[in-house]
Length: 90
Image (cartoon, rainbow, N blue to C red; front, side, top):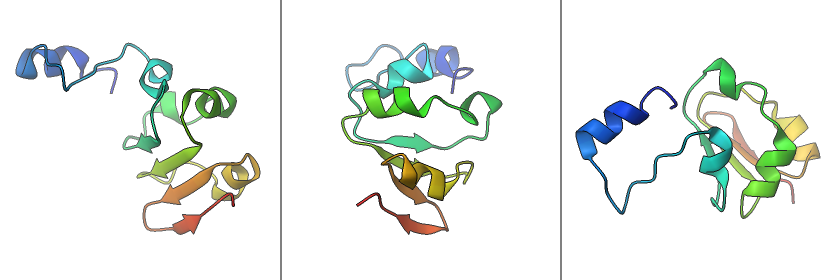
C-alpha cells in the first residue's frame, strides 16, 4: 500500500524482518508470488510482463478478484482467486 509506508515506519520502526518498497515493481523483485489485497486503481492494470520477470515463479493470489483468470492462465500464471477456485497454468 503506497499510502501506508510512512505510517508503517512510524509504528514498527526500522526492522530487518520488514521490507517497505517505493513501488509495486520493487516489491515484486525476487518474490515467490504476488498477493493482491487491495482494489486500488494502481493495481488494476499492471504490466504482467514485468510481474512475470520479477517474480521467482509466476504465481498470483488475488484477494480482490480484480484479474481475469483465463487471461492470466494464457500468460502462464498460476492464479488463485479467493473464492474462485484454482486456475493453474500447468
